[in-house]
Length: 251
Image 1: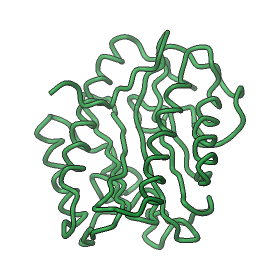
Image 2: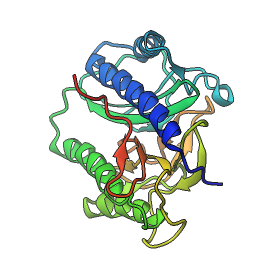
Image 3: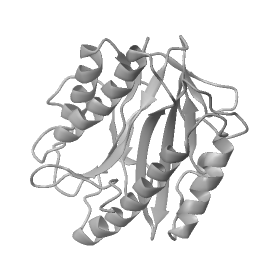
């Protein structure tokens, strides 16, 4: 069942979304050569606590981290640990914050001194795919319009989209209905209505779309070990353009 949020729900989700955006923005600034993913994860826990929130990920189905940090050919769900970030890496940060019972969920991919234009294009395509998808999150449209926008943007640039993991509804629970695939034809699925809140998250691979879960039970990598990028915003469908809830807000 898709939960339509009330104005009061949306007001609270704006806060949790803004907190998630602030945390991921600070983490992205700290990403650099020699930094461990555990150091970033510890910082995220501290930043969430300072804001009165907590991780939506920690303990979820036994997940051991505060955040998910995935590097290079890791798609999603990378567990933070002693691994050090290196020059030339691309680092995907995924942050979920619970504040007063509501979840804000966001992700971005950071380049660490990357100069390869093909890698820069991959990252740029992931960002553009998210923007295109948000542009289709309009009342009266269909859910698969969002999916099609992601796939079309990726394929036009020569990339594939991950099929085994999807975006999702979000609110009091981190994963609510509906599931939002990153591929498919337009004009299908539920009609989009004001008050729907969705976590839209393109996962785009430089090579094939196939992925596999590693022995830790969480980390997802591309099967062909090609690079992968991950971007995500929590949005609210409105009467006009969608509202992005995971913006950090004015400084």
